[in-house]
Image 1 (tube, one colour):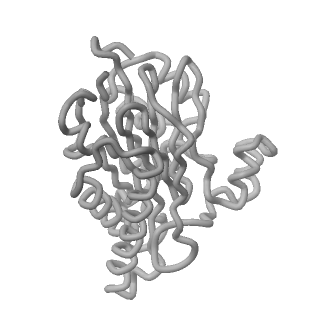
Image 2: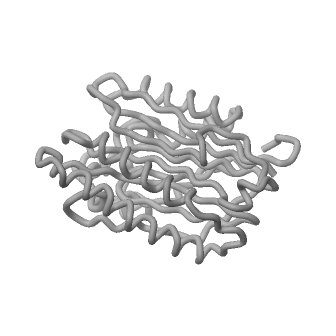
Length: 269
């Protein structure tokens, strides 16, 4: 099998700077054979962080989070680790990521209210998948023509939205859909949720992105995402198209998405 991974980001039509950050594998966009030594030793890590909008330093928080996580994750090998072992390792890393973000923000008083969401996946052989997130950046999986969210937004209406008790439009109307109950930073609940219940295989496409790409009242709808992914294309093409369409549909926020496609040995999803 092979992993085709890439990402794209756009500042949008309104924001003065891009506060999103993205991490794709050890060195960026890649076509990685699962039999390769790199995948055997490290697996693959993909993540997106969205600096909290409206505060000075959101870009600093998101960049610090992913730079720290990258250094920790690719700083040691984990050949043959189970999902539980990988999750425990990531939990330790993410505690250190939170500490690094807090320490960086604490150095400048004007950054006290800054913070960042984080969402990502880590994959190992043979089918180990760990999903992690804090905030409203999301992880989704497309497979067999269907699209499913693997994360639930950490907002006051996140659970209601995920279980169908309210619709996206109803969630947006509450005014609570973008109020984060978890994020990395100096204040509030900074716990990162880690999930080991999922697996990966040929035909899966994972989408990891900020709320400007796909969130309540922002970016692309679930139906629009499904249409683009089902039309096909490599990871780089899908990432560019998904972000471009999100900006065209909304553009009020930065938009970022990372795409990971699981292909067979012939390159077919």
